[in-house]
Image (cartoon, rainbow, N blue to C red; front, top):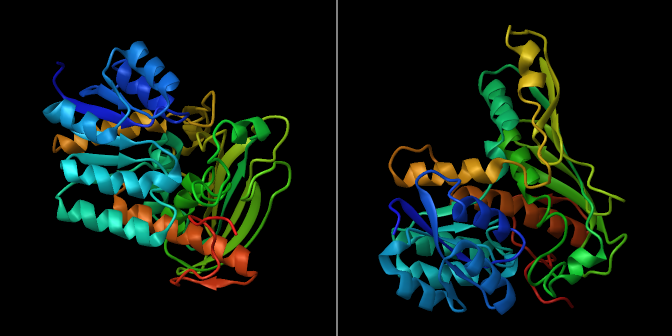
Amino acid sequence: MAKGIGFALVGCGRIAQRYLQLLGQGEIPGGHLVGVCDIKEQRLSAASKTYSVPAFDDMNIMMDSLGSAVDVVCVLTESGLHAEHVLRLVEHRKHILVEKPMALKLSDAEAMIRSCDQANVRLFVVKQNRYNLPIRKLREALDQGRFGKLVMGSIRVRWCRKQAYYDQDPWRGTWRFDGGVFSNQASHHIDMLMWMLGDPVTVYAKTRTALVDIEAEDTGVAIITFKGGAIGVVEATTATRPHDLEGSISLLGEKGTVEIGGFAMNEVRTWQFTDSLPEDAEVVTKYGENPPDVYGFGHRRYLEHVVAALGGDGERLVDGLEGLRSLELIVGMYESAHAGKEVHLRFSPANCRLGTDNE
């Protein structure tokens, strides 16, 4: 068997196709696919045959069978099962990578962090857009103080998800297993807003279900106040028609303005500062990479960093605690929308339906 970091996948659905391509085709140096698991025989068989790896319909059997071949197990199942699956897999003492959001309930996320810490297992929470080249350039400018006092940050998720998308799996758009556009499609963007603006203090949100038949929302807006004084604005919808339009972030400060758009925050649209630098002139062209779909290029870079981190040569990746921070804001947004009032963070959810059976 190939040397390096072995990855096993739990879940072979929509997002797993990105992992299968990257790990199964040898596109991640030092990382390779060793096994796949799913309870749906058709997609499990397709993944196994395409990438010539063992297939299992039980995650525990897979982990026992593959043994030392597995270094990282990737939890790519529906959001509402992330916590259950992580808490079962942690017993195998392998590092765990979990897709967004890490859980739907704050108590579940806290239990995941605690269990992984006790087992000395690293918990990687996927926030792949932090690895987009334009986003890295934006963060670099922020760390250099080029914006001065931050005034406002905004994210816009204008994507298209028609009824056929939600009908692919019975859990899509349900409160128990998925939530709506805030918890699913916009979770990466909300994390990005916090990464740039810091700790949120209050949030006021409104949601509606506009064009599809699901329990949760397909459209929502939120206004967030941050500890540093900046205001954050979230605009998120899967009711864009007829096609995806953008997944973008704008950052405004007293000394500069940056907007990164494209499908997945991959394309520099505006890059202007009061105190310009020689390299500013080429930023828009050099970092203007727009990917062919909303997944962007970040998964490749994220997995490369996972391999480097486990080899002792990587930077600190998004961990359970960082994943919990963005989940707190998402739950706060739902708490506000469901209660019809502004919510002060931190709080104990009383009205949020995310992660619960619909009533």
